[in-house]
Length: 152
Image (cartoon, rainbow, N blue to C red; front, side, top):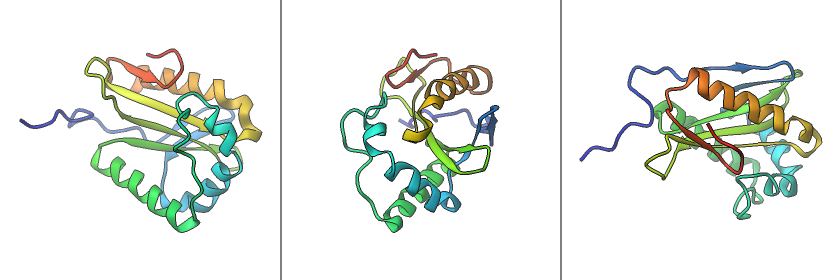
């Protein structure tokens, strides 16, 4: 039996979410250096963020390994298996990421995780609120689970 698609065939994933202090765009290889700098500067902070408690990520990676990870996320986006967005501040520097992937629970349409750099921790709540509203408004999920936070 064929697996149900993550999103309907006619759905076009949004290319951006704009908020006053940040914006989300699909994560791509052009973000490699800034993405790597963002998470490597904030490993302990990210591990303390809801949704990242097991300590398996972030883990030390070279810039080349990070690029392969970004390429994997970009491939998931193109093939509609999952959607990873980079979070950019107003100067276009990477300050975090948002991951939207299928849930393992049949009753939940998607699982969402996000993180921000330690020096931008005050944006964690505004980011999660903006993403939750965006998912409710612009995405086809009837439900989603936002890792470690109240869901949609």
